Length: 89
Image (tube, rainbow, N blue to C red; front, side, top):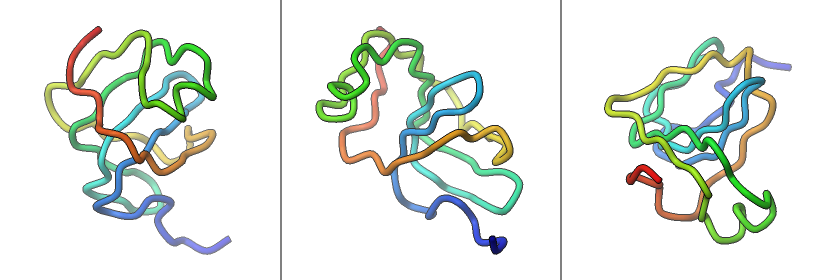
């Protein structure tokens, strides 16, 4: 493996870590940390396949500020083609 950042700055992602799920737009990234703007904790994504297809989650908790996440806790990440959730539900 090389030390290229795992996310591309400017793109939106859905990210699963060992404890939480997030959506957000990558604004900074290196080999240790990345920072998301317009980020939300996806507390309940419902049926995972439907969530990925529609972008609709059962429970969403948006962050007020940007959030930084350690690369070491990421399980998987995929580009997010839906509007980023910005309302709590």
